Amino acid sequence: MAVATLDARKNVYLLVVNDRATSYTVNADISELIKTGNGTVREFSYKTMDEVVGSLRLKGGNASFALAGNSAILIKFARQNRSSNPLGQNWDKIELVMLRIIYFLLVWPWNPRTLEPSNP
Image (cartoon, rainbow, N blue to C red; front, side, top):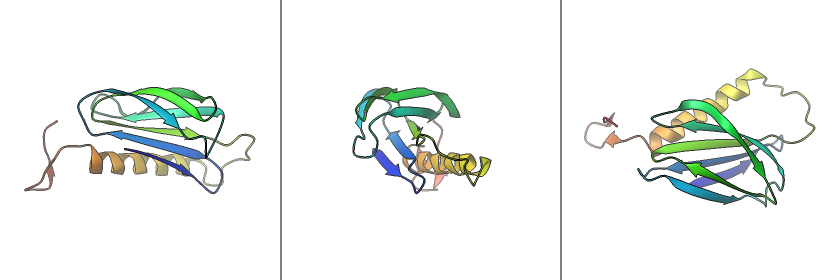
């Protein structure tokens, strides 16, 4: 599953969730929202618990990247030449909480009888 959004400050976010054990190469086209730019890539998985794992460059609104099995990636493309963020560090914390919630709802294995997380 993939979702791309544009916020009021013209930042673009691409969230990609893989709820399967198989890794994939993702070819994302978000050219309707942004054509060029650099993105910060965060991963949340069994191996990498919500960390910046790299950067990504868009060309013509397209980017390719690897997506590990049972993981989520959030890529933030900050708008060019922006002034300082009025929320400061709090906005980064909000992004992390959003990524964690989506990961746990969509990827983390849940026991449907008890609604408790099952062992990965």
